Length: 194
Image (cartoon, rainbow, N blue to C red; front, side):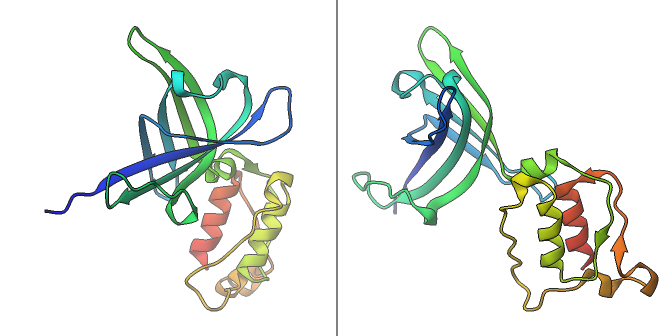
């Protein structure tokens, strides 16, 4: 019978209230859960940590990003390797609470992946030029909101970038009007139509 040893580690990237420096802090949770949701929702992660082993008070943080690494070890003495190969989640911590009780005090961190930023931000009701390759259209849409301008667009699984306008009538080929919706919904709609 083969025995395996699962492990999980959380790396936090933090900015404290009175500082702008990003501090990286690995922590080992008591419990961690990652939910991979459909493309309509942001993926989520929840980590519970022992407050006594937590290196700082989470209430002092202005911003916190959670990276979750998971894997399986062959032996109980093997050390986990935290790297890109076992990174399964990156997202902003939306909720951090401290749960006090008689036996244990736990820090509970709940995060949503970066898709949440696009889901939570409404695209301005402007026309979108769909006469260009889809990758360029998405980059132009993202450039309208400064925090999204740095996002790199990568289309996978296709050899040639489609032009959304090629799938529309001659009259609707240049620009598509946009109803009020999130950046994420707009990008998903355009991708599904191409």
